[in-house]
Image 1: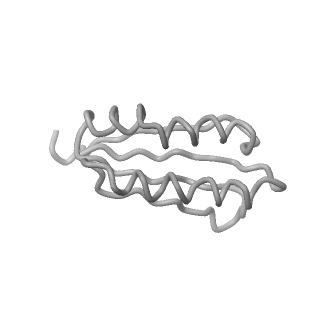
Image 2: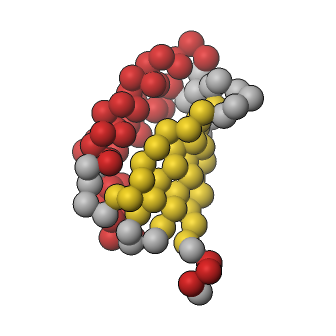
Length: 97
């Protein structure tokens, strides 16, 4: 199991465009084989800070997702929507090490 947190700080004037852009990414990613969870979370203290919480069955599923057309389209669009570079952290279940 792999869990990914992708932190995004959105330009305030691009917030609505960002939210629209994520809708296609969310639905397509949730439909991928190997996806367990794919959810956009908003920071409670900052309306322009978001974290995409992803849970994947294995590294192959993550690799497939990262190469998908919908993910690549989102990454390209995000360059115009984000106030700072995307920050990605990946985790594995340490209870099974």
